[in-house]
Length: 339
Image 1: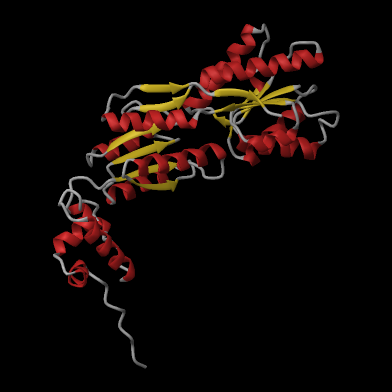
Image 2: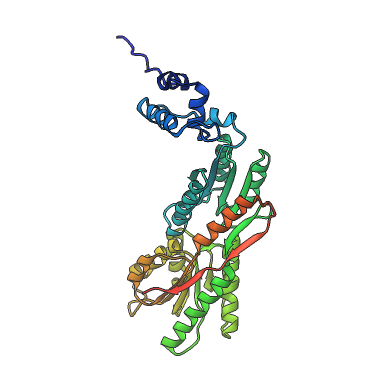
């Protein structure tokens, strides 16, 4: 049996010969520097077309070694299956490309080990900047990148060693809680505490949302028992389990709830449907997250939409300005009734 050797890869020298020009001219066109070299648009178009026809792929890592900057920008995100993080990724890519940058994104599933692994992989591609979105330990990512001379910006969750852009979690939670408390009082004629469910009790965002939740109750003259604050994590299964355990120990179920994400809301609604404990009607809900499909639940829900466009504008404002001050920029979220 005879082996067939793999086809020979096209090089810039092959393209130069086909285009009737120098290898340096081909390299300038493929790297996007042809205008600086005063290469004509006609020749640039000819080289680009030949490269496509010959199946030429630019060796990015070799190209990076020949330049001061890679023009690659990285982002790590904790989840893809969430409208909020999906919107962040989409707008990050658009804003990066507007600036002539090549975006790389990877999902780390809120796993600290995966976050570090992803950051190291990004550094191996010589990214110019890394945006750590929702990182469990953003300062560790900053230290790792700083050792390689790479800038970082924290998004969604703040750190102490690099600039951070987050939502005003306290203000959003305060307003959301006020609205749900008012909705419950309007329908049932009395003030009663809400249930807080979802999120990690150790992360900044959840801590601030719980603080806003407590303060809104205090302002309304309503006492909140510790058993009503269930920071059980974001996963639907964890929210469903927490709801089941709460119902087993409570003589009276809460008439209103503050749910800490649409991911947790999935578990809450699953429990409500399966348990039959709210057969006379869905409780009043407030969700610190946003998805238009939640309108299918009816008019018993208020939602917080985090202002992703302004958050990303702030992130790229930091990058464009070269800011390294580890200040925290808080972007007010939008609280709106669904349905």
